[in-house]
Image (cartoon, rainbow, N blue to C red; front, side, top):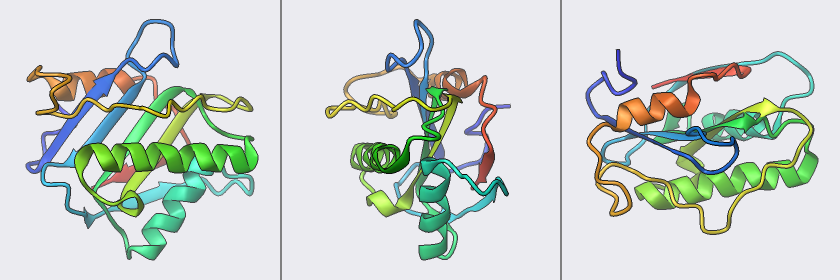
Length: 158
């Protein structure tokens, strides 16, 4: 089963350098970039990571609507304070720009090592279907490879 089995979604996965050699960033978005009803389950831990806080706030502000989610593995961006929150916001902004939606409509998930700052590249390019940087037609497989060891503390459902 593909992450894009539901009609109206596209996905991509890339190697961004968080892991030595495997795809480590994935993007799942609506094919038109418009927000759709979204459900999420979050950790009950009092010390939620910046990506969790970002998602909770976005979904509350939008009445449960989102256009997509950018996911990284290799770094949980947890225990990282204000800088970690800024990194989560930067990931949302870069992904939103790549797909043509607004940053508040983009969610972010991170899993991996705890307590390390996530190195966010200023010129982060997400390879979305149709993007000039990646003409492959097997994006859902790449997206799944980008998050196959995802063991994070929340789940997003569109």
